Image 1 (cartoon, rainbow, N blue to C red):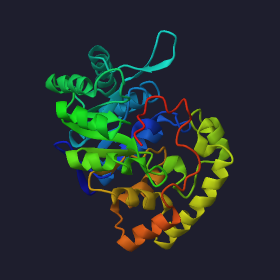
Image 2: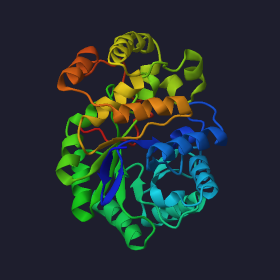
Image 3: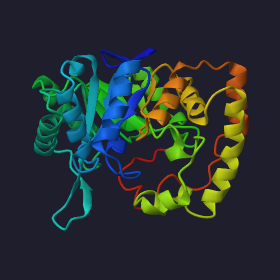
Image 4: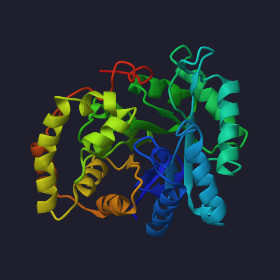
Length: 330
């Protein structure tokens, strides 16, 4: 597996997104999650990226159980988790980047994962009321305490990254980035390259749109997140499925699965980009690995962008409610 860097650490160019170890995109089992992690270890995927809120701790607990069942596996892994999304007294979603909250949540994550330290700890959502320098300082003190080795931020603007990085090196920024979501190219991709920060790309296969088997309407209707998401509601869903048909045909012509081509394209967007697709399927994970091993020529990249040009996707990536938290910067 090709290698890239997150801070001082060398990691596989492809990571595993831990959201699929919960029921976010459909019911799963510990057995399924273990099988994906087993294959990841077998093929040399070393970066595992999760969060305390994925299944309200379930993803971390599953990873922790797998580590316990595989003595010695921790030494070869780069484990990241996130915190900062919580609920207020009325049960409404809010964000808390305070030192006490972030440390307490990290302590809970370490317990569920069964480790003394994580390699990367992100603020899952930046709390706008707190200056970025303070958030970076809060996370940096957790590095000093030995509870994490590097810090990251998620869904932030380039200006926020620059301010935070001036206080403490930001090893990674996590952002949605794929052929269907290209906003990071409007400053974030460039800022990360300039500062030596990895861009950890979540949903690199467009929440299934950029695969040979997009989620069925039935599966979408069962997902709390997708059934209201603009890209997965009509008439946008039908329009998007029509658009990706050409992409699937191009992938087949190139001898790749659609998911593999989507991953390969993402990796070709910069040596600091690390996609972290999530899946409940070993077969699908093999397709993702295929993409990490593929090499695309300039001519092939141009053909991909001809089939799916910038801005092709119908519908915003989030609803108004889902947009609460991520920073818009363009």
